[in-house]
Structure formats: structure tokens, C-alpha cells
Image (cartoon, rainbow, N blue to C red):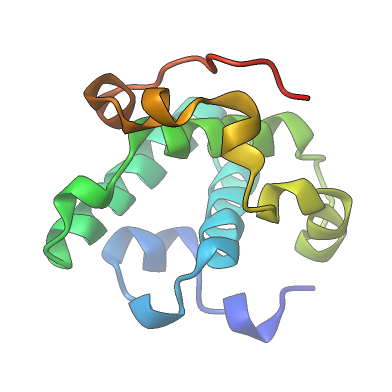
Length: 130
């Protein structure tokens, strides 16, 4: 079952940017990524979700806010943990760390994440998670 908060977030609505951006918080980003991975082959999901986020940041006038490494990192973690037929609530409960504020810094140094290379293409983590 999908929480009412996310009922309007489908692959199509995200790609069209047809949702309330003021409500598109971190959990909504993770849900949308999960939805793309649930419905599409992995590489297609990453490409389409990345493109949708780029379009959204351009539409909002903040194109530099898009970050390739962050997007790919979350998409790959979600895909690794995704179980066919598992609903959103079960996935969310089993993967609380995806919502922790320090998840990225367990894998990446601030310098790496701030780099132009990390913003414009996926870079592998530069630290080992504790």
C-alpha cells in the first residue's frame, strides 16, 4: 500500500514534473526512485529519473542543484535492496538508513561530494562505510 503522500508520484508524473515540488522532500525523492526501479530495468530507471530531476532543477531555476553522484548512489542502493513484489512500506521499514542525514558522508568525503566531477558524473565512494 502506498502512503497517501506519495499516491500521485508515478514515473509519468515525475517525468512530467506534475507534482507539488514544495512537498518533494528527501523521502519523496527516495520513494520516486524506488518507483522507477520497481517499474523499469535499472539502467533505464537511472537514466529516466536523472533526466527528470535535471529537468525539474532547470524548471525551478536551480540547475546546479542536480548532483549525479548523489542520484546514482541512491538509485544503486535502492536497486540493490529492492525485492520484487515488496511494497513501499515494507521497503521503507527495512531501509531506514536511506533516510539518515549522514548516509552520504559514511561513503563520501565532503570534498568529493563538492567536486565538479561528482556533480556531473557518478564517482565511486571515496571512504569505506563504518
